[in-house]
Length: 435
Image (cartoon, rainbow, N blue to C red; front, side, top):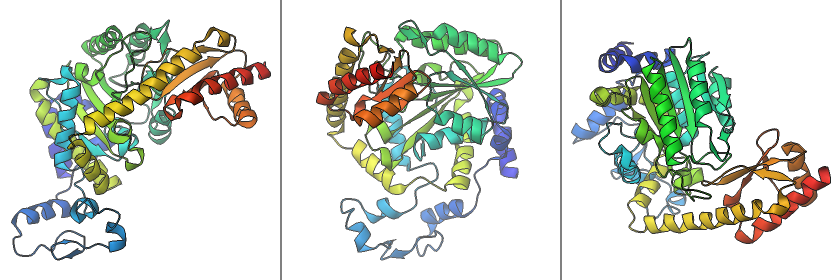
């Protein structure tokens, strides 16, 4: 399509490195100059009648049923029921960008794109795959991982998954990451890297020194000539508890953006966990090109291609969710509200840290380091995590997640303080009964 050709030519001129990262689908994607473009023009100029967009109107506003709007009395029908633009409400995108800058000082002065609204982070991951993943491409990530990554990139898109050990001692295995990246990059023009902090399932965020080491490994491999698409899944961003020792409080995206022309940083974050609105399914996808000089043009081209992918997949993300989140972010009380909820989660995390590490439980499990997010993970001793999960469920009525052969994930985010010690007491008993 001529529109795709034009976008590809613009991208090649601005950054031949990023252009070479595109998948076959990514090269074909474009945003059509069709109904949406014509409707946008009519919105600006059709001062008499506007017969373009496919909605029903009444008295100059979207037609609605009172039985629907009666539950949405504080939101205008236009902000609740109308279609949203494919990339999301512009005001919300700009507001989220301001939030990113406020929370990530390392982003200040960097050139990066306007966040694109997605139907939560899973949708964002899929969009990244549309643009950059071909069958056989390699995706490198830690061995403690969210299983949906495999479903998205391996099952749906045919990528090859490679892992490296998550932990080294009491911290993140930065050396193993650098070695795995160098090893798997051999003979490949492009690799994709996915780092998820705060991590699911472990609840771990690296220290500042570990973060620097991860970024240095990416930079060094880019220097060697490998094209790297670095994905930063920040779903649980902001929930930092500093258990054991201080962790980073910024996204690695800020350190990776504009780092090297061969490195494209991509951030995936969202309101789902940060604002505790899981079912509203509102996430954001942000590009941080490696070359600041051509970053604006690169982001404009990638924005158009993502809009094409959204348009051809789901058309647009829900308007109502975006309006609710935009109004919430504009509230004068939201910072205090978020702080209160974070402190509730911090208290739970601190209690779990204390109880799970109690000496009386050492014969049953080893606690993996954790310091953030919703989860902690432990290594069962002498019995498989699946056997423990089933026995704990059947005999004690307690649900947990078997995240690996001996890895059991516990979501302290949904435990009250007085439930924490009884859960671990039951877990200890379950393991001992199985030994």
